[in-house]
Amino acid sequence: AQRVTQPEKLLSVFKGAPVELKCNYSYSGSPELFWYVQYSRQRLQLLLRHISRESIKGFTADLNKGETSFHLKKPFAQEEDSAMYYCALSINNAGNMLTFGGGTRLMVKP
Amino acid sequence: NAGVMQNPRHLVRRRGQEARLRCSPMKGHSHVYWYRQLPEEGLKFMVYLQKENIIDESGMPKERFSAEFPKEGPSILRIQQVVRGDSAAYFCASSQDRKYEQYFGPGTRLTVT
Image 1 (cartoon, each protein chain N blue to C red):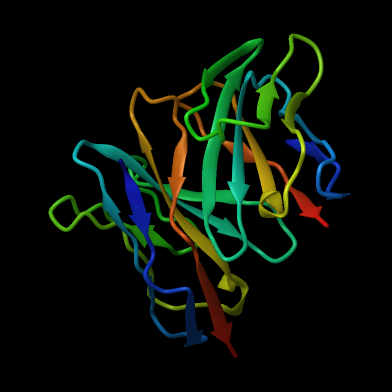
Image 2 (spheres, chains in turn orange, yellow):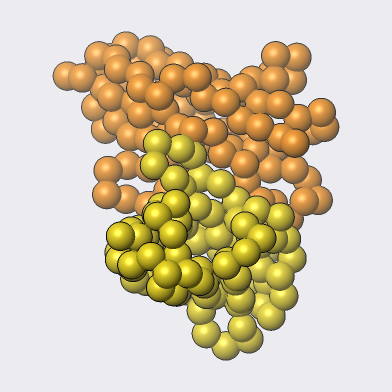
């Protein structure tokens, strides 16, 4: 069965510092990978997906099939980036159900 | 578009009672997904429904849990004879099609006393 691991429950950085939120997955096929974000008192929302190869709010994520990783990166963190971040995976032709990691809380200090 | 709506937002039930959670998908969306988040854990898939059909219920506990998405009205997640371990946040998501982005509701926080 597929699995998503986010090794850090909490990541604390200062404003302007680089950020990397780690995500590793296990699945023998070719999954689709996502990053979801939940800001305080807001609902979960899609941040980016690997197939679109976009940069959203300065965040990027590259799928590394060799290392089975999909780490989320931003060169200069902002205070408004403070939120819960969830990495998720879906399997093609499997109804698009999402398998989530445990989440990482990012705190950006002034 | 008001987005995915869930009600109630908070639900308190005593052990042995029934809990009914409702989810109204976004306008034009006919695919609904239910996820459960236990304390300190990530969201876990429970069930995937289309109008009047259960497509995948591989994440649903075998007993006491059921879900429906009727032709008219919201999707319902029903938990019979609740136990303390059912206390969690239950999230609903909807999508236009199985290959499209899922939009999440605000969740229902169930507390079993």
